[in-house]
Image (cartoon, rainbow over all chains, first blue to last red; front, side, top):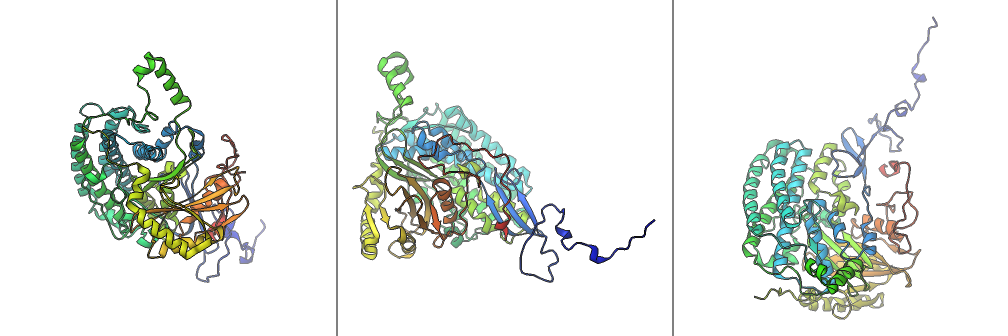
Length: 424
Length: 189
């Protein structure tokens, strides 16, 4: 048997790079103590990964468990909504707004309807506005319950999530009574609502809100002072006030860093002037503060639902403006004029006068804006959707740089990026 | 019972509240920048909800910086950057900046005209968050931004041809790629 001698020189210099999945070439300044500097691991997280909320992708260069450098990608569920907005009538576009932030579809419907109504100068009757306001607050509660619940699941607290999910299901039952759908509602119409709320719906909503307030107390006791939860979230994913302003953070994520802005209070629409609510502000801008702000916002929203249920009165739900009014089915089936009106409405669509407006509303994630530019006609010239998640997701990379990979999951869960709104 | 709301016509709502403030702001903008501001569309006179300030392309970053920090303006929140395609007109594109003030809670809109093939100075130096919005404009309209640190496509694949939100791009202009986009290692250096 041939005796093979082995020397160190025979080891190829780039052995570490050969055949190691994820290893790659990198030119950094030579650090004699850093034996592994030439073979950093690249981890490709997503687009389909249980810790990424939706089809998001983060490519990270790791040093041990620390993210040295990373970049984020999205667009895997891009459905060209802005292009569709230029090619569909204003009525047809309502269903597309559901799929923006699918956790709070009602808020998107309402904001879109507000934007078109603003261009047309349509005024809504009181009852429609009160119902819209209740819907916005119910969907805000749903969205926040999902956000805090899922971010707790990401960090290992499963029970907490189930408490919230039960109340979320009951809220969806409430929404189902309004419009027959649970998730993608399309409840709003330009200048009105699809149906009036059924008899006694306000009372059911009030009972639900009161019950949910108690459940929120239980959830609070379960998690807020939990040692493990605090260790995973306090001081993690910090984004301070200056950074939030640089990256145009809005909504609960900005308020967690001490930016005292809430468009419901500062730019009131509907009847937000007539109800009492507080705007919770925190100072540190870490995951824990975002959680606290969201929990307090749930309480405030539930209080708004209770106040709305007390103030709402019977009345019409359609604007008296004839341009946007969908004819009643009785008229459509029994009269020729009604039939023609119905046909024209759905085939051609109503005309929106020329003009442009940027309409915003405090959606559950932050400032949701529709910039609609019309040149007359039944289709818009430009339909820009400003989703808050785009700006929040942009801040993720500076937020997690130099932090542990596990903290990235906590940070991503706490800023509540919704892929539907991100990709549009 | 009166079932109508007491909310005035929504175009006029902001005008009632901020009309005087906007008037003084537009006057001081004109005094400070002179001919660098092409024109101002004021709500009530033009079909818009907030004042639209048309700025010369070369001066837009300076005007944005001025609006962000000057005590009379304090538009410290960049709400959005987008563009519109006015195809038969010349120049073809308009880049739109939506600003919001966290101290007075009013909004203003800045617009810049761009011809196809021309580029706009980037606002990343003023707001780092403008990065992705400008990348999206490049992706969707093909408007380049001078001095942008990382001008790549953002929503579409990097191999995509054409710019989907241009008016001459077809509604069903599908492009299908057999392989996914590979991780870009240059971005991790």
